[in-house]
Image 1 (cartoon, rainbow, N blue to C red):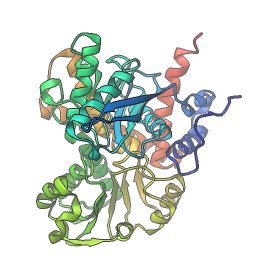
Image 2: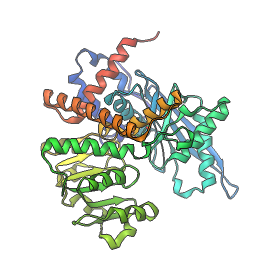
Image 3: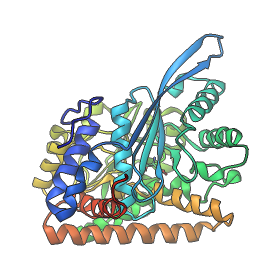
Image 4: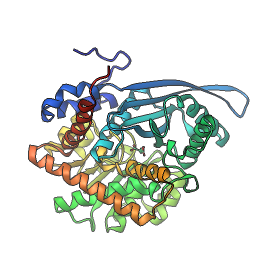
Length: 424
Ligand code: GLU
């Protein structure tokens, strides 16, 4: 009998609550390994740190930071760092757990971890951003490392922030430890293809799902929520394949154009000022209307909990590609399944980023760097193999792709757990 965690009280649609319900759904498919399932329902280790910095105006500000190592049965912890004003320990716990499932689903030799700082980075100067990153890295330095836990970019973090993290960690250990973070700039042991990898993985899995559904990508209408590194890259690749991007939503609002938005013009504007600034290219509509837009494919590529029961009821999409982590709440998952909408779950759909992170880490250790073609060919192969295996599992048990992904991943994790045994 296990005690409940004292430091989190998840609700049904909260990220950790969503994750727990996803684990509960896989238990019937785990056979004798179900004995170990409680392992997945609690993080191995969670660190809360105070991050004080001197602001440009001379005041001292304190921020709350986290690093959660959910599971390390199959290898070092792996997962991004998020800077966002709404980050909480509970959210980081869920995100770290989804990394455990994700790395196992695509069979990378990693566990799952995640970090974050509760801050709005848009309100910081470049100097303050560097200070907060370095102090946070130093605080979590006691648990991260190239062989223990390897951070990477996530929402609102990028190559420059990874460079500061790598430098801070390296200064503290007295060397140059390129393998301590991934998603670094190319000059510092970064990998070709990493920036576009997550969006590319969404495209590769989405193209295969569309093929299996008999959906022609030429002329397919796509709605994209979140137009950062994931959403905009996926949109571009789908547009190249002949699809029409009919709606895009970001933090500034929602733009729609049933003839297809001109991405070559939208992307530069969106990167600078947000999608609403591109009003000449489409109609600006209230944010809730995004979910009613007539479309064939829906790509949530923003934050958790976006596809609620009500929105799942409304969407006209036949295929949902989860570029974000945890965008669909469990009740909405059931509604989409009942309505015959196919969901390619986050833990496979957006695994392209961590897959190329793995390539980066391997290249750093071998000090031998691959060309972009080699990276993309290997990435596509890993994503396709994983998707095909999950599809077969879903067909065999007549379950959703999400539960099938959890079945494949949890078997790998819990088998490793069982083989390692309990210490002492
Ligand atoms: N933040 C990304 C994710 O959610 C990438 C993590 C990584 O590369 O380690 O999968």
